[in-house]
Length: 336
Ligand code: HEM
Image (cartoon, rainbow, N blue to C red; front, top):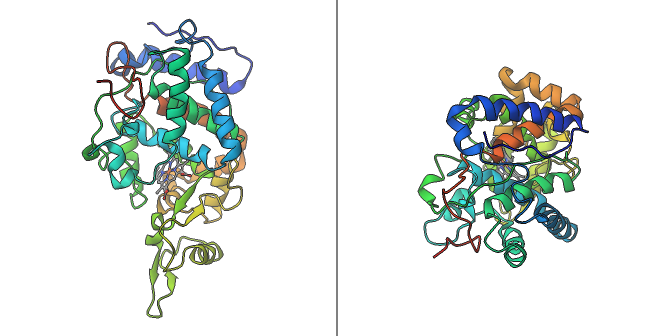
């Protein structure tokens, strides 16, 4: 096992991560061959300041644009679900992942690009775009008040990015709980991980079209609520923000209460029937996940503890390591 642990045990989240890592990296023969080549001190000799640089960059851009943390976090999610966490979502060009309609609302690419440009000056050809994205998403959570977690490094960048792989690997708000469970399971993510990672919707925003299936236009050209699982006042607020003739670029906050704070308000919203997407609401209405939602709604500490574990699992989905893939020189194009 080539897994090195370099963090200190002063924090309960880190301790639980350690326990998780020991299990994952020693017991799973199918995934350990790649993920075990990751390590916490992967860049200790080759680019020792990488984590500080990424953190400073994310802090700097977030202080001038409060929407960036949400964008970076979602970008990582969409990267990891398709071809694994290999930066494939960052590639530009005809027919790449980012051209698929499920990805056209993604943003935050330029932040990753800028960090890469800086790192290419300081540590040329060393740090993968996939690692930069994982760190940036981790820092985005911390920047908005969420837990500080460690993520191992050493991901390699993929050379394949195809729009045709997106649909079957990205969850849609119309999915049933069973469909979401199945997709998450196929990435090694459990039901608990699904509920915990959905807590990412405590920050960020969504276009009106992302939840318009909960309303329909009546004969007077006004919207009416057709999804009875949604709180009536919240629904009225949404219809006000997203009327029939809303501009297609109009967005609403995922979390109407504390839009820019990474906290457990998302779960309290679910309990109050204020989940924005059908796929959020179902986590409270289905008895398989209700108990966990209630637990996380009651305790932010529990959410933060679980987040550390689930986020770690997300960042190592199907990673490429060793001689696989490459270290891109630019994040939006494969090396020539
Ligand atoms: C489980 C099923 C999930 C579904 C169906 C879903 C769907 C969506 C949709 C439709 C949006 C709005 C996009 C837009 O209109 O611009 C969104 C936003 C977002 N999602 Fe999810 N998502 C899911 C899970 C996750 C997970 C696991 C994460 C991260 C770990 C995540 C992070 C985010 C973030 C941060 C935003 C806000 C993006 C922004 O502000 O630009 N989502 N999600």
